[in-house]
Image (cartoon, rainbow, N blue to C red; front, side, top):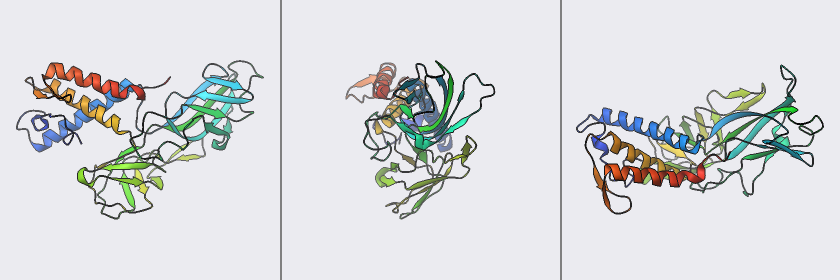
Length: 299
C-alpha cells in the first residue's frame, strides 16, 4: 500500500540505496510501525478495534444520573459493541461486584445502524456514551457511591491475513478478529481489492472477562456469507477503517522516509509542486494531522 500510493517516494532506497529486498522490507515495516504509533499518539487512542474494560466512580462528572437512567462517558470511541459490566459500592474493599448484563446497557448515538455495518470509508462518527438501565446506579447513596466497570469494543475493525485464501473462500485466517463480526471490510490487494461482509468472527483463544463473558479477540477466523471474488496472499490488509486514516498514515510514512534519507530528497509534492525534503516533510505532517483531527479522542 505504501508503494502504490502516489507520494513519489524512493522506497527502494530505504534503508540505503541498493539494499537487499529483505533489508528494504524490514525497514519499511519498521516505518509502518513507527507511524502507526504516531497516528495513535496524535489521536490519543488506538484507532483499530480493541477490547477495553473501563472503571469509573459515580455519580459524578463521567457518570451522570437523570430520571433513573445512568450514563457513562467512555474514554475511547467509537463504541462498537457493549460486552457487559459490573457495579459495586465504592466504599467496599474488596468490592462486591454485581453484574450489569449487556442487555441493560445501550450506546447513545444518532447513527441509524451500529458502526462497522456500512461500507468502510465512513467519516469520524460513532458513540462515546453508554446508558445503564434503571436501578444499577443512583443518587440515593450520594456522590461517588458506586464503582462501575464496563467492557466494550471500540475503534474500527482492522486485521490482515495470516494464510493465503483462494477465490471463492468463505473463511479467512487473520491476525485479529476484534470487532469484525458484522463489519463490511475492504480487502486491500491492488487490482484484486474487494469488499467482504463478515458474518461471524471466531478467535483461536477467546478472552474471558468478568468470569463469564467470552470475547472474540486476537488471532482467529472470519466467516463470510459469500465467497471472495479473488485469491489473496498472506499479510493482505482486511479493514473497515476509514480510508482517510490510511492516507494520513501514508503521508507520515513519506515524511519519515525524508527524515531517514542521507541526502535531501526532491520529490513531487502531493499539492502539485516540487519541494525539498525539509519543507515537504513538515507539509506532509501538517496535512496528515489535519486529516486525523476528527478522529482524536473526544475526552
